Image (cartoon, rainbow, N blue to C red; front, side, top):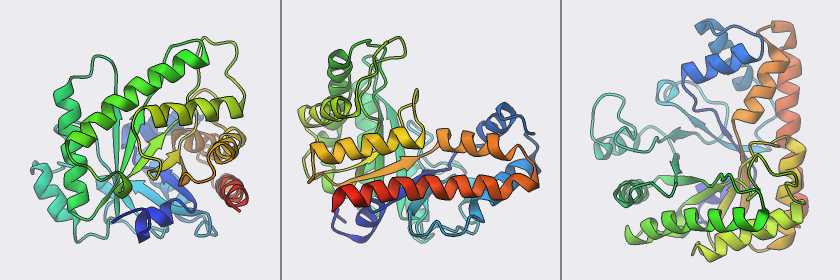
Length: 301
């Protein structure tokens, strides 16, 4: 499986929705939006997303959690969350290898594999993480390697240096495990200064800093990237600006995008558990994916 094969190429043509949060996280999100965290409201929120028609053109995949593994999925592709550490996918106590064997016949096509690379992260943990990514590849699954590079640095050039170090540590572990870089996708947030910065930077400056960090860390030019929202300004228009700037800075890099908590929070605030708001929330979902996919297609042409 490479970037020219079906799953990777399809995911990079549009958007991926990260919906693999557990019931506590979804409940907290609904409560913060002024709704209720009751199980029936959480299920209704999932149904709101499942029933949004017209997403097939722009949403090319979604991550799900293990409890929803066998639920009907409206997206063409479905993935599964993969927490870091000994948990991996062990919902019933099996080893990671047995879990991957079980997944082989479920129709799951990709795994979200998030890792927080801090200066204190033990090398052994990163090596274990990289081995799991490699095992996923050997089982025919496409790993989506999400490397968290958030920093407290107040200036863009220092944020770029911190991101480079984090990416380099992760990439070194992946290289050591003999992971094939064209048979995975890197899910990354654009490099921006920390929350105490007074100047987050223009999209073109952020794009150059992000690509410099990616290149300097040893991630190959042919490796695909899913652009994630910046936590502090993650609206759809901000993501669109970052996508366009990244495409201008490197027209040949395979690029897609992924959306998660920031979009779900916006949908929850629009919905608030009221059935009469369902259409409004679904329209927001469709419009967001359409805006970003249009940006991606326009900048690629």
